[in-house]
Length: 74
Image (cartoon, rainbow, N blue to C red; front, side, top):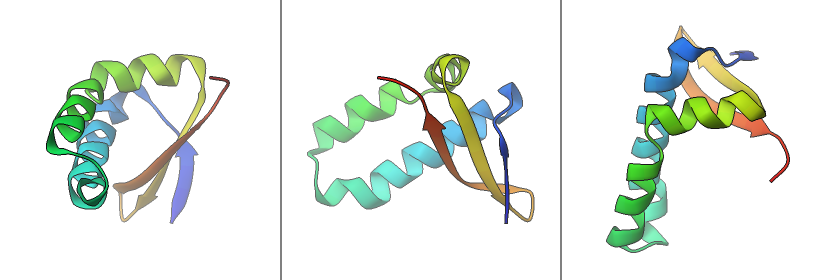
């Protein structure tokens, strides 16, 4: 596994991964309406916005993004 800084080219893949994770993992704890609202929020433009003011990283395995994380103030 490789951990590296996020680049703008990662936005679509990170967005898709976050949305997929929301649907698989969080659907047990949140209503369908809440998941849909989060899905609308986690679009590539939002990922790019967040990456602009945080230290944003991705984890890759075999050139596939398998995780992400951001360090920043809220």
